[in-house]
Image 1: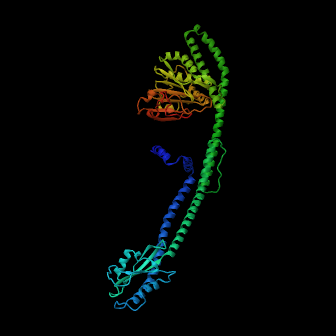
Image 2: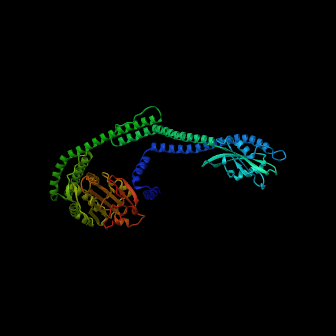
Image 3: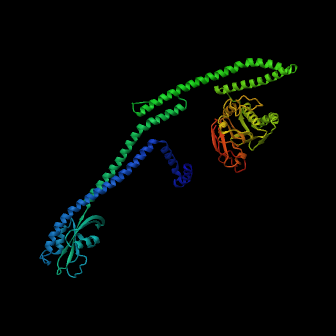
Length: 584
């Protein structure tokens, strides 16, 4: 599922991310995936920003509400006092107008100095007042009487002067929107003087807005500082934890590269220090064990090499005596003649085993070298097939050679290549169960490949992981005509590695096996694929339910369905390499 999502998101990312930004985005994503410290710090900073925004907004709202509520209390108390005095001055007990300053002069007096009014006063007919006579509506400072919200006017009329409702809203003053708070009351001037009027005291909230702006800026700067501080703290804390882990990773990589003397620096007595000491103790134990194994391996290789060399002299003597007896076997009685033949056969096998042991000891000691030249691989394969034709006839089978497209010239050691092909073809004949053996050869611009396919007993899944092991046989009880030593495939694998190539195998029980040798065109050249498929086409035709096991040249088994590993033809109809290309 994760792989499908990634494949789906990749083309979408190409559409969303512009071309010039793909490189930096790819680097940033790679950095994000590789650095745990970056992920922890970034996550902490993001969470800190969210917390600061949420908490800051809540606090700012509470502070703003508190400032406005405090201002409301102040202006309501002041307005109540001025409203009472104005009501007393403008109306009599019977509702008749007193001898007092004019309405407009009274409103201006309530508003304060004209050049710097502390508030604005609005005087207008109450809702529902249809009287024709009476003073006109008036607003101090030239403000319109229409600025009062309808809901506040309705509340003022409903109270009948028993209380002074207030409301916060915005109005336009000097061309800009200004938040204000209006406190209103009802005046009854009497029927003769015009009836009921509404009186409003409008206060600007400039000072409160300035206070809120200061608080907001303080919150913003404090929030940024807090987020940066939290990020710095997270960076320091994670560094204390991640740095020893990163050091352990680097030390482990150096140990894996062969620098067994590398150790972690340990400071203190905390959990990470105990981890570092345990890691160093483990590394020291591994170093001792590896040195012991290297010494044991060196002694073993020296022993095999010495024994192999020391056996050559007695083997030569036995060979000479055996040949004399073998040539004179017809003059002996039948029992002695048969013994001479058996002795000669076992001497041949012993000599072959000794030669293989010497070759293996060279590989183990790193003394094997390539005597390479530009050779025609097809000629070597043809020669091997021709030499093994009598053995194929003895097993009532045939060997078919098919040469595919492409040149088969490559830089290689002809002796080693012939040994690999001879071993593969001989094994295929031995296990063919009288079914034909197919040898296929092809090349491309990068490599030359040889496959040897038999249709015999095949290989079980458990066998595939050990097929290249030394002295391993799939069925030790089987009679062997060639009389191999059990080292052929192991030596063939080392020969392939020495060329920088691959030796791989596919097999199924009762479906045969397919060995593939892939050699680069040039020694040390790149090798990313093979001209021939590892999974035979006839195996792929068995259906999706069939299971195949492909083994890489290092012996690692990979189990998959044949449908997943089956080769697909290329555009020009030439055989393409299988979907599974295993590294050497």
